Image 1 (cartoon, rainbow, N blue to C red):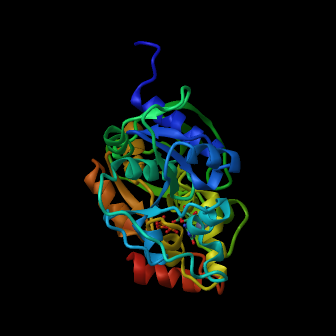
Image 2: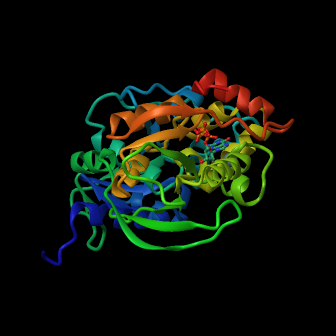
Image 3: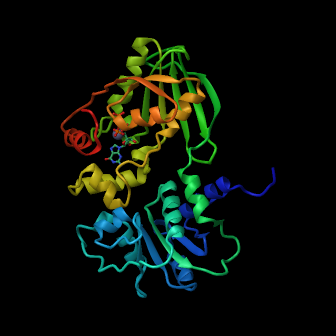
Length: 353
Ligand SMILES: Nc1nc2c(ncn2[C@@H]2O[C@H](COP(=O)(O)OP(=O)(O)OP(=O)(O)O)[C@@H](O)[C@H]2O)c(=O)[nH]1
Ligand SMILES: [Zn+2]
């Protein structure tokens, strides 16, 4: 092994760069996340050439900008546009107060793969998917350099996970419990497996894939059903004497807590959970459930009785080496605050509620 960074390591660096407001170089373009861009950096970037703002098709649709590149749009940045303009285009929080940002003109000729890779990186850094792109022939030294095609392939590939530590952890639902920590080898989040009792590796295990919800799991938020689902699943496993709950750190269906709060703010303005994600530039669900299948395989399980109302989870398990012998419904925690949310999940996201 050489001391030079691999592609995976370089991507991990690039995520951090974007989060602190530093541009990266992708296939001859300087790429900087609008969310973290400082005024001085914007001025410096302008010195290299004419910037274009890369947005996802979802955000472009809200802004009535044509997305000629299919899944994304390259928006022309007017010569006098400042950071306030860029932020207003990137962030939907003021869409209703200041509805017209445009008209916005978008590019149709040229290659958009660098822009596509930049947006994928911004999403994986849990930033708003809006990236300022400036062509560059001689990038300044010290910036992280990435190739667009391989970055896109790597970000779409399955993440390798390695167990790092495990210990006995008596919990209210079951005193005989072990908590396993698994670490993503791409520098992403760690994920947890709560193993209750001594489940046999040769029979289907009662299992739950739980996506992190700080607001529901920790604060007891009434806006969703996560907290009650978490506790009901653990209680069912405790009663059955065995089970495994995977706690996946994919907060906010994979958009991160900051973006989830942006989505909640849009929901306070009257948009539903799906519309809010779209206005921010995200898909309804950005989670990667392959992680759950990989964790189960890593722990030695090959078949499950899966506690979920979400048919996508069942399909993803089946598609990635875990047999789902039974779907066990998990319908708890409906209240007057989350009633409309649960109805949208049934009607728009296909949940079996
Ligand atoms: N973006 C976004 N995420 C949300 C919202 N409400 C809850 N979440 C997140 O949604 C995830 C939980 O997913 P759910 O859709 O409730 O459930 P599921 O895991 O798909 O399906 P079940 O297995 O049936 O519970 C957690 O990561 C929560 O943080 C919301 O309004 N917007
Ligand atoms: Zn929740």
